[in-house]
Amino acid sequence: MTRRRTTLLALLLGWCAVDASAKGVVQALAGLVVGVVAGRFSQRVPRLRPAGSADEPRRPLFGAEGWEGEADVSDWEPFRLLGRSMVDYIADYYQGVESLPVRAIVEPGYLKKRLTQREFPTKGEVWSDIMADVESHIMPGITHWQHPRFFAWYPAASSPPAILGDMLASMFNVIGFSWEASPASTELETVVLDQLGRAVDLPEAFLSSGGGGGGGVIQGSASESTLVAVLAARTRALKHMRRRSPAGVSDSELLAKMTLYASDQAHSSVQKAANIAGLGSNLRLIPTRGSGEDGQRCYTLDAGELSEAMREDEAAGLTPVFVSANVGSTNTCAVDPVRSLGEACRSFSTGESTEEEGSETLVPWLHVDAASAYLVDALSVTPEILRSKEYNSNQVSDFRDWQVPLGRKFRSLKIWLTMRAFGLEKVRGLIRRHTQLAGEFEAMVEQDDRFEIVAPARFGLVCFRLKASCAANEELRSRIVASGLAFFSSTKLEGRTCLRVSVGGLATEMRHIRDLWGALGRTADAVTADGF
View 1 (cartoon, rainbow, N blue to C red):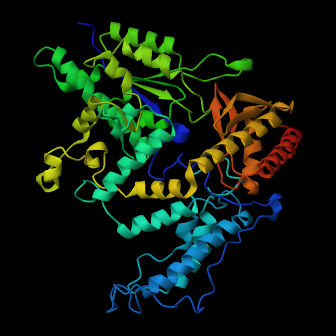
View 2 (cartoon, rainbow, N blue to C red; view 1 turned 60 degrees about the vertical axis):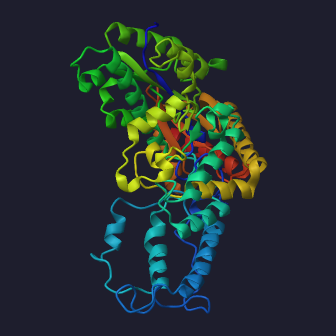
View 3 (tube, helix red, strand yellow; view 1 turned 90 degrees about the vertical axis):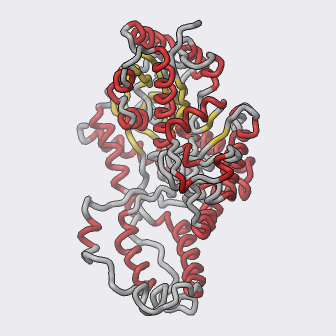
């Protein structure tokens, strides 16, 4: 019998991860036009339709007395009127977002100073008064992720169909922890994730319809996906380590022998998941080295160094149980050599077969029967009140067993509506356009001797820096962000401050890229002149 070790290879999909907001499914579905000169920005906000108009009753949403009065809370006529106004307000916001600074220009604690009322009102307030406070107090503290010059991170994308999908899901307001609690919610999620799997050309075995026990689940966030993967790997490892261990060895002793691996470019959720699972000190972060094409740093996890680390740990009596690979890392969108990493993991597999291990590679998608089983073993708690005849007879999957929380929203409805309304052709076109815009920006950087590219542009992300000190780069970013013209982020690579421009807004056009580039050039000259 071959030596058995457990390794669960989790691909943290970065740009294309599926989470609560369907992030990455339609990465670039929001934002409109922005002003060119920073001095033209103001704190002006879009206004709700004029108060007291024929379409907007000046009274509490649920009548004169609000919740404590005798008003009929089942009266939906005020909702009809206010709902129309709210749709107008949302549309006005998107059409007027160009007048706002991209990042909120407020100081910490600003809102507590403005909202001085210590308790909720005893009686309901007039809706237009509430919205006036939204405009006066909430709006100034919003960083506008849907702005076409929001380049800091991949945006939490939105779109008209997605917003309408949120409204529809809120109308149903189901808590779909089980099939019985909401058959449509459970089954639509299965259908939608199979469709998404086919859209990105996953093998059929990954899908629920593939006959291999596969399937997908929408986690609340990418971080929850990572945690679920780590918990499943821990459960799987414990099962096999118990078989090989002498009687009397405790689970805590076995947990202390587990090791997890990731590159130093891994998402922060990997460390957090390891901490929550009680394995935080067992995580090995392997430094990324090596150059890519044209001498550019790739910042990818090397399969040889991973194998060496696992061999050293094995020789020390430890057990490799989990490897996190990047397909679009947060810092630079680095793409790890997944096939080579998978081959390295197979030699340390603890599963019933090494072939089975090689297939358990995608989060939140699950491939084979064993993957689902280990996940359910790790997360399933089924009191009698949650049982049903369908669940007991294994006719259905209850997604509460596939996640940390019990309750779950009808998230698949939003994805389903958005993808049907736009179609794959339009979504693919948006992604290609963002990649093209990022390529144009990268070319601008390469042609300017003041700047340098620090990692190849991928998936709409460009990493670059001013050929100057870290302080100069930080000052360059700080001045542009403070102006309200654009918002982009920075990171540290090999101890140097680098700048990140992430292209992903629906209305981001080449002119926005040129405006940002012009601001970078002018500000770089000013920063240099000031002695940074």
